[in-house]
Length: 562
Image (cartoon, rainbow, N blue to C red):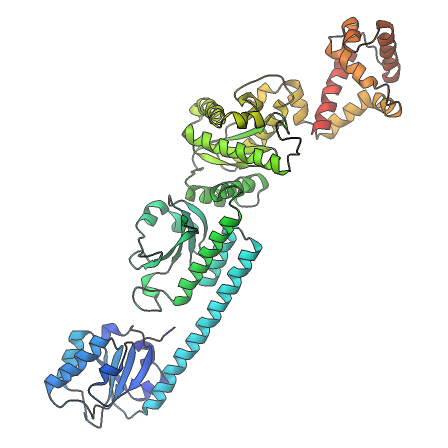
């Protein structure tokens, strides 16, 4: 918030005096904290550093030794510069001894060749300082207000980082302790260049203290965490050549900004401590972006790479994991209730751990209230089957290691379905693989097979119909085949002939076995079958008619369960 010596020399009252720098020309970026006019040789004792001293020289020592001592004392106390008005004591130039001493001590020494009222210089500089302080205060107030609102609103980390970059006008990056990027905003610069080789670059940024500036790297850094548990760093790029607060320190408002942003992130983490971790949130954001097209695929790939998951030039496989039963062990609670959420969260953690145990790279998170999704990034299509088998085995081990309480609550390993889509070669196609995996997982729940990993060929007719459950032509087929019977059952709820038809078809059209299973006498059961034939106008002894009805029943189950 303070002007430099160079900026002071550019002010009109100073320029009117015809300033000429005779020493310390390379130190003109020193900050001027205040302006002080003095005509006594022992003025240094009254200064505290950062002052620009104005003098006519009438009270300065007359010998070279005294002048060198005077310059030395000013340099020792840390003044920003010395301005000498010529004419009264020194007619044309300041003494050579002063120039050489100032040059040796790196103290800017300036001659004024015309008479200049010092009060005008003082007023101009102090006006600059006060205006800068007011601007800084307004900026600080806006920072506090903005981040207070973000804290109250429970803003996501990406939004906090975006706001910080907007207020600073500089790139801002949030990383975890492993130097993986959790969120970033390039502030209009190239994100590709900003994040290229980030982990290696970040490890070279070593500020001192919890908040500090590394002038060599050009980053202002603060630690993010609370209650003694640090979990990341927030970095703001401020190249050393752009410093406005002197060598080694960015403007005060930026330090305030980055610390307030870090506090907002830490508070948000505490508020979400019972929910999924921050890394999982980023994974979920990226998977959602792939599914819903909310972000360009290039940006998804870039953010994933910054998080340590390379998706480009990889063989990608969508995977969906879900429980076979929606409410198994959830105490009767629906999937959206606390028990169901905890159950799904445990499954998401298990999937994440299984990926690590199987040494697989990929994104993973919950997809909805029922399923956990992942996109595996494999180096080669040849390892696809082996990688999926390793993941499924690791998931079983993780769930078994969770202990008997977890298995009692959420079922044995076989109660979990692992489904995989077709492998693809680009990030843009990953959406198709993930959607296919979700459809296969849903369809596999209707089947009776128990496989480590389900693929599209495994889902059978019931699975195929489940995949087509939203197809209007399938729904029309169901209504055409079974509509009259469904209407009859609606009008005669005590008969429920649809169940009779289902039992007959599932028994392989063995009327006697079906009658026993239905706990009815054969005449009564035969009479029911006859009524079904009349209502539907079909021959239940004809193979083609029964095949159509059986497919329609499976399709009806798929439509109803969808």
